[in-house]
Image 1 (cartoon, helix red, strand yellow):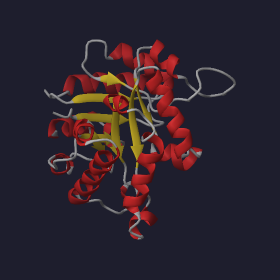
Image 2 (cartoon, rainbow, N blue to C red):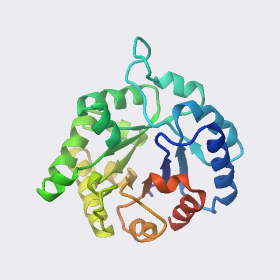
Image 3 (spheres, helix red, strand yellow):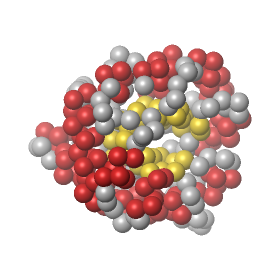
Image 4 (spheres, rainbow, N blue to C red):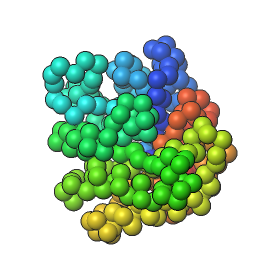
Length: 249
C-alpha cells in the first residue's frame, strides 16, 4: 500500500521566532493520522525546527540542495550539510526553482542523483504552465520532465522517490484545477512510470498534488485513487489550516 503524505513547503517565510511558534501550535493541533507529515522551513531555521519537533512525529525536510558535495558555490547547501543536521528528505525541482532560478531538467537530474547517492529521500516536483494547459500540451510537458530527470535512474532508486505534481497554472493565477483534473494527471503519471519501468514501481510510488490544496478542497482531492497526499504551500503557514488538511487525508 502506498504511503500517504502531507508536506508543508514554507518557502521564504517565517523567521526563527515565528518558526518555533508555528511548530509549537501545529504540534498541539496535529490530528491522529497514519499519514506522514512533513514541514520544510527555510534553511536557516532547519536546526531550530528539528529541536522544536524532537518529541513530534512531524518530519523536517529541506526545500532544495546543490548537486555538488562541496566547493565554490556561494549560497548553496550540500546533501552532507543536510544529513549532518538530521535532515534526510529534500524537495527537488519545485516550479519556483525552475521559473526563478533557471533549474533545467539536466540540473535536476544531477540533484536527484546526488541526493540518492547519499541515501536521501527525494520529493521530486514537476508540472505544466498555463500556456501548456491551454495548448493541450500538458501531458507532453509532464512526461518530458519526469523522463528527463528520473528515467536514467536504476529501478531500485524509486523506493526513495516521492512525486509531487504541481499544475503551475492553478497556483495564484485565478484558475482552478478540479479534483478530476488532478486524478487525470496522477493516473497519467502512474502510467508513464509503468511504461518506463513497471507497474509494481508505479503502484508503490506516492504521488502528491501541489495545486493550491486548502481545507475546503482537500477531502475531495485526497479521495481520488491516484492522489496520495499533498505538497501544501500557503495553507501550511496556518496551523489550523494545515491541521485540517492533514485530518482530511
